[in-house]
Every structure is written in structure tokens, then in C-alpha cells.
Amino acid sequence: DIQMTQSPSFLSASVGDRVTITCRASQGFGNKLAWYQQRPGKVPRLLIYTTSTLHSGVPSRFSGSGSGTDFTLTISSLQPEDVATYYCQKYDIAPWTFGQGTKVEFK
Amino acid sequence: QVQLVESGGGVVQPGRSLRLSCASSGFTFRAYAMHWVRQAPGKGLEWLSLISYDSSNIQYADSVRGRFTISRDNYKNILYLEMNSLTAEDTAIYFCARDKPPNDLWGQGTLVTVSS
Image 1 (spheres, rainbow over the protein chains, first blue to last red):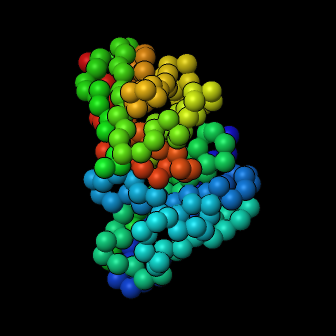
Image 2: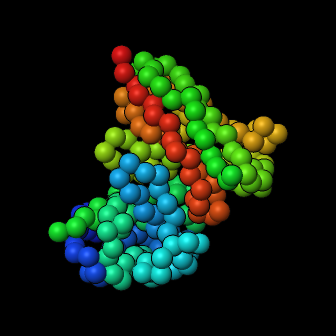
């Protein structure tokens, strides 16, 4: 099975900062890569699918990119409501593996 | 409105069984594949299982294969997860999620605690 590894596991940033989270797959699987946001105590929320397509209602400060085994989630200008844990997920075939998560907090 | 509502969680002794339900509303349930995902306390998301819209394709994570069974009733618009031989490692919040793909709609989760 393909393993998904996110980095960093934790990051601290300031309001307005550009934030980048990386997701690396143990082997290539195409572009069926999604990103989710989970705010503290809340349900996961789909942000991006097919590597770079923004889900309906998601602010444009979120973007996704990548190919092969390396994928990136970027928040162009961090906002207070972006404090959350972010997960990548491959969804080409089962198992639909998640990365271990990246917790984003404010400095 | 469009929503998923899980139920059936609770405290269960090790080795026992539990069945979770996920009731859907506001969308055509029979048109979508569905998934179960869990989250242990303070931990990340773990994908568990998927079932196609017509139940013809079912997949499991290695961690639950042989112990958990996913099923659905497209007349009642309900997704199920039958969990057997539960251990403390199965303690988690269990979410059902719709397959857009990927998972665009999630329930609020139901907590399963395996403890003697």
C-alpha cells in the first residue's frame, strides 16, 4: 500500500504569512489527491481535490499543486480561522490513505 | 438539509460487537459510494472502508478487514458498520462520509469506547 507522509507535522505562523504544507507519497498514484481541514473539535472539511481543484465555498487563499509523489497545500495569507489540522488523502484506489496531519497554529 | 447523522456508538467491552448507523438526508443516497473513517483520541484520520452505490464494490483497510463489515440499505438511506472482536485500539470517533469523490460530506461522528 502507498504511504502518505506530511511535513511538517506542526507549524507556527503569523496572520498574513504564506504557509506551505507538503505531502509525499511512497510511490506515484496520479492526481487523485485531496486536502482536508479539521478545526479543533470539528468535522473534517474538504478543501481541495484532484490535486488543485478548490472545493465549493473554499476561500481562494487556499491552493494545491503537485505531481508524481510530491504535493503541496498553500495558504497564501494565513487567517485566524485557518488554525486547524490539515490532512492530505490519496483516493485513486483503496486504501484511501490519509497523511498523518499538519497542525497549524499562530505564533 | 443535506446531512449525515451517525448513531450507535457507546461503551463496549473488549471482544464484543457494535453496529454503527449513518442516516442520510437531503440527497440521493443510492447514487453515491460511502465511506467510514475513524479518529482515535488526539490522533489523525484513518480510512476504514468504502462501499459502492450498489454494494458491488466493498473495500477495507488492513486494520479492520475480517472484523468490520460495511453495508447499506438504499431504501432506508442508511449506511452501516458492523464491528466485531473490538479491542481498545478501536476506540475512536467514527465518521461516515459521502464519496463525491473524494469525501465532500461528513457526519458529526459517533464515539466508540472499548473498555472493560
